Image 1 (tube, rainbow, N blue to C red):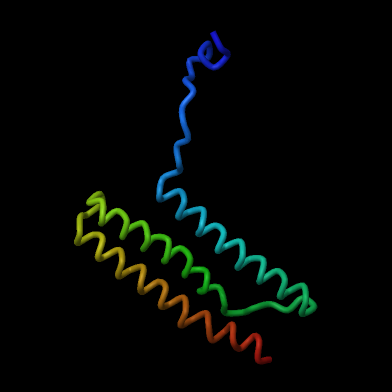
Image 2: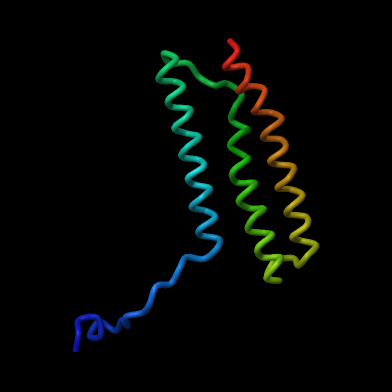
Length: 113
């Protein structure tokens, strides 16, 4: 017997991560890039900050949630059915729009100073 069979585990093939996990990973990459930008901005401007840009952090989560909702609507596994999916997509669009409308002018203002 091999060691894996004695532990009760079976050797299996490659099982890819679920769509939700992959989407969350891409969202994490987006947040990492955003945080690196904020930290580098502070480093290269001598401690400068980006006031008013926090709403921009709504955008990655809104896009990721919208992608997951669309995927689940296609598979017909969306909580609340089609109506719940559409309601969630509307909330995601509102969140992304608010993030852009509130955060982007502040970001431009930080660069114009």
